[in-house]
Image (tube, rainbow, N blue to C red; front, top):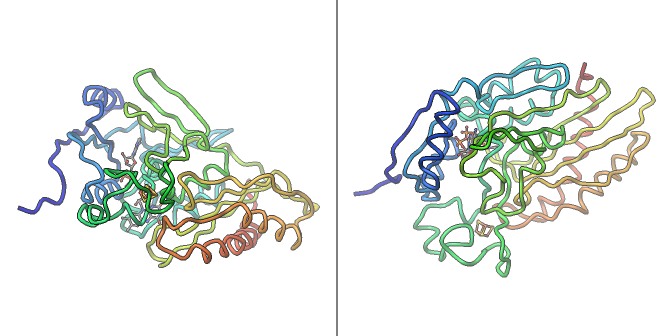
Length: 329
Ligand SMILES: Cc1cc2nc3c(=O)[nH]c(=O)nc-3n(C[C@H](O)[C@H](O)[C@H](O)COP(=O)(O)OP(=O)(O)OC[C@H]3O[C@@H](n4cnc5c(N)ncnc54)[C@H](O)[C@@H]3O)c2cc1C
Ligand code: SF4
């Protein structure tokens, strides 16, 4: 008999405490699921074999977007479609809205959640395959094997962080709230990710991501998100990039942030970046810095030289988009 997924039981807790108790009781054998748009394909590919799947969808505490005086607090269960179409998010955090609107396709955006996107597993052309495909190649370091087909001699998985929200949220200085048996811990999203594609977050197996908190940007903050993908209607990023900076009334740029994703196990912050009068020369200098910093690998099925050449192109597009977007207020 053909089985397309392992056998497991399903729990649907109504509160965070219930979910945490289930995680503690089934330590090492449980998996969390929100929208399931990445978890289910991975399950079918045999990348996980949990004994119990804990659905987070019924936990009200994980819902809602709250606009506070100093920050915007986004529940882990906020839908990608909701994020992409929320008028206040678009006005205050346009790059986040732009990124959400380019995640997957319309159906997946209605199923997928922000928490699932932030916690998304890394991707690689050698791992997001069926079990028989992977076994024919002798598996790889990330699961069941001892070789990385990308680096060949490397001892660490370099599968790519492919979540479109991650570079944007890092560029905006977001913090994540993680709740576990010892209570709440908050950390900058940049520190949530580590450079190992086998498991690229510091989320412990008994923790749940509850909220993402983004500082309210000042009125002079400009931002944009750009993405390279094969089909504009659905695909994962071959490269993504988030830009944010302050622009004063004299046209002087300061506090620039540029974060590039889909190249390595965690998004890369390009720094230091030059500041000064925002003219073509400054944009060229920042584009060149990004080009120098980014070296795509063969972890994604697209030409590495083309992806690298597209880095400065995306930087220029991001500057153009950020200058035409309305000032935040
Ligand atoms: C065809 C296709 C195209 C796609 N294109 C894109 C794309 O362009 N860009 C992109 O970013 N993504 C893309 N995705 C991936 C996915 O649809 C999105 O990333 C989505 O936002 C994932 O959210 P989810 O709620 O469905 O996550 P799930 O699949 O439910 O979960 C994903 C992971 O996060 C964990 N998780 C979920 N919520 C929590 C939580 N609160 N705390 C701790 N762990 C949690 C799960 O255990 C799982 O490991 C695509 C998927 C498909 C199938
Ligand atoms: S980067 Fe290497 S170890 Fe990681 S999934 Fe790809 S082939 Fe496997």
